Structure formats: structure tokens, C-alpha cells
View 1 (tube, rainbow, N blue to C red):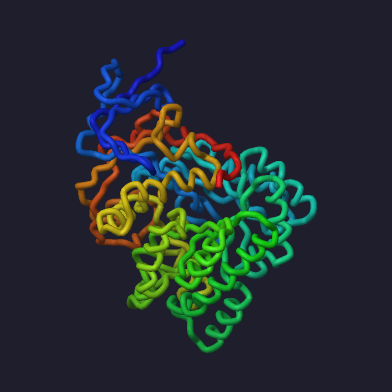
View 2 (view 1 turned 90 degrees about the horizontal axis):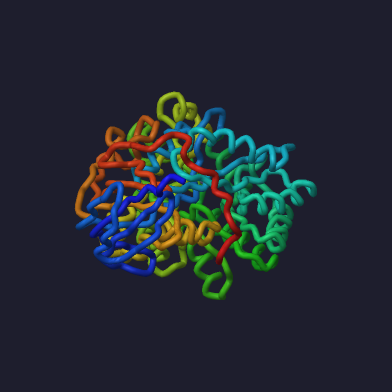
Amino acid sequence: MMPAMRILISGGTVVTASDIYQGDVLVEDERITTIGTDLKVPADRTIDARGKYVLPGGIDCHTHLDMPFGGTTSADDFESGTIAAAFGGTTSIVDFAIQYKGQTLQHAWETWMQKAEGRAAIDYGFHMIITDLKNQVEAEMDTLVREGVTSFKLFMAYPGVFMSDDATIFRALLRTGKNGGTICMHAENGGVIDVLVQRALAEGKTAPKYHALTRPARAEAEATHRAIAMAEMADVPIYIVHLSAAEALEMVTEARDRGLPAFAETCPQYLFLSYDNYEEPGFEGAKYVMSPPLRPRETQEQLWRGLAFNDLQAISTDHCPFCMKEQKELGKKDFSKIPNGAPGIETRMSLVYDGGVKSGRISLNRFVELTSTSPAKIFGLFPKKGTIAPGSDADIVIFDPTKTWKISKKTTHMKVDYNPYEGREVTGVTETVLSRGRVIVDGGKFTGKAGSGNFLRRACRMI
Ligand SMILES: [Zn+2]
């Protein structure tokens, strides 16, 4: 037996969703084994964390690496995307496998496992996107839950491509009541949006801003309400992905006030960007074409309030980067052909720390909860991930809360030719990152290895 590799993180401020204290954290091989004060143990390496926060590694439960969309593929694959994630203090992702029409879920899962294997530098799990719920596929949902793919995403938007009708959604919800899985919902009324898009194009409105103007907040609110109502009738929890509109948040708040297990995430782009970005000159607005779209600036404060008061439970990125050149350009003459998505996997932790904790909108504990602990609980990764505790995986971020960082295409590692936050200065920087006990980011350098991330066989929801 090889003796365990020991790393001692000393003198830092350990922050979890519930605690803040000065302490030393001992890591042996892949796990945290001891937490104490003034630990006097021999270690292969001691990391001085004085003046820094010692945080559980970030969990981004909404990413799209190597994903085909609109005739092209998202610019980050599992290697570049997970390395960028690590730089930003994220040590686990839950990405989306896609079942296309006629395929089995097994086939879709294997396809995405192949994309990640040998490439991912941090641990990864999958949600399964269902687009074709035949009876046989419905039965397959149970198998996937047993194999650790315990959540399924359905779409109320993109008719003819991803959209499911209400009967299909209701069947999927009922099934999760039996198998313990969770339904994640893209809640926008796709039928209404399609009509608005066709009308805009017929009127010659082709600029990027029409992407937003044809996806009204009410279309998101209506679908959010309908999704929650169907989950209520099926007597199961539901998780709304990338909630962007204040009107949709109202639906979630109302449901939670009635005691329903309705959950929702938002994303940094909805907290820091707004409709105004679509008004940037020329074709620049294409950088922000994503669904749902950016909303009026006032929405940002409403979302922050939702995060502070637990009407929103998680912040994920929906990282789905497309380059301006050759990718976003596909929609130069027609906004509906602009691939939907933007980069963000690397900037989430710093943005949320700066805009949330430093600005006094959320507590430091809440920051950890929203970026790590709560996604871990909702998606069956807790307490292996999402906290700093003896027995948990040593996924640890040493975070400097005083250092500043100018976000730019030049200072980030995502494989895309722009950054939506170009030039924004944030306080709070990821300095050192451990993934299952291995130091993978060390003083601004990547020291990990592509392919060393493990597939995360997730348990069922703990909510
Ligand atoms: Zn998405």
C-alpha cells in the first residue's frame, strides 16, 4: 500500500453553507479527513491559506460542452470547458446529454460519456434531455436513475426540435414520482414565441435584439406556472432551469408560499447583464443571444432578492459558448439563426462573490450555498460534494476575497472569441483549486490533467 498523499491547508477561513471559522483542513488522497485548529501533522505539502477563504469547490449544474445546436457545436469541449471551470473555482459540473428523436436514452448517455471520457479535468455528471418519450423510453428513465443519471430535462420551447407537449411532460413527471428522479424544465411558451418570431421576420426585423423582443417575460412566466401546476398535479418536485424574468420568479414564489416543492436556478448573465446589451451597435447584440433572453435592468434586483430569500436555490451558468466568427455570424441576416448561448463557466464564482457578497446582497454562507451546497443537495451529490467536512471529497477552492480581476477574453480560458463581461472588474479571485485531493490550479496555472475527472453517479434528490 502506498502511503496516503497528504495536503494540509492551514490557517484559512473555512466557509460552508452554515459555518465560518478559522481552521486547518487535512486532505489525504481524495478526501478531507481532519479539520481542526493548529493541526500538527506531517504533510507532503502545506498550503498557507491565511487571509483566504477555504470554500467547497463550485458546482455548476447547467453546462453545455461539445453540444450541437443550430448547425454548429458549442465552442468548448469537455477539456477546454472543464479547465476553464477549474480556473474559476468550479470542481464539478452537471452537463446535458441529448436524446434525439428515435434514440434510446442509453444511446444518448453513451454518446455524451464518450465526449467527456479522457477529456474532463474535473468531475462531471449528466442530466438527460428527453425529446421523444415513447413508452419504452419512459421505462428506460428508471434504469438511468439507477445508473446515476437522476435528472431529466424537458423543453416547453423549440417546437419541432426539443419541445414536449403537456401530456408528455405530465407522464415524465409522474414517472419521477415513482423512480425518484427530478424533472428540470426549460419554461418558455414555444408556440407563442414561434409565432412572434415568424411575424418579426416577415416584418423585416432581423437584428439580434428581436431575439429578446420575441421572447416575452410573460411567455416564461406562463410556462413556469404551467410546469409547476403539472408537477403539483403529479405530486412531485420540479426544478426550473435558467429562470430570468421577474414574472416567472413570481410564479415560483407563489408556489413555494403554498408549500410546493418548486425549485429554480438563475444564472449570472441575468444578474449582471440586461436587455440594454442587445442595443449595442452593429451585430454586437448577438453575443447575448440566449434563451431565455436578457431582461430589463430592474429585474436584476428582483432576482437577487429571490436568491437572498430562497425563492431561487442555485446559480448555474448555462455555459454554451459560440464564437462571434462563423458561429453567431450564422444569424447575421436573421436573428432566429443565431446559435443560442454564451460563455460563463469560468466567471461565475467571482461575479457572484463580487455582486452578491461584496455588494451586501447575500451572505458569504449563502454564496457557498447557491454555488455549491444547494446544487449538490438538489442533484444528489451531497455530502460527497458541496461542503467541507471529514469524509467529503477534497474539492476545495482557496479564494482570495481581496484580490481583483479584470474579466476579459484575454484573462479567461474559455475557447470563445469574446467575453460578455469584457472589462468588468470584480473582487474575489480563485487562487488554488483541489479536485479530489489533486491540486489542479496552482497560483494561476493549470496543473491538472485532462481526463482525470470522474463520472458522477448521482443519488436521487435530497429535497
Ligand atoms: Zn441550457
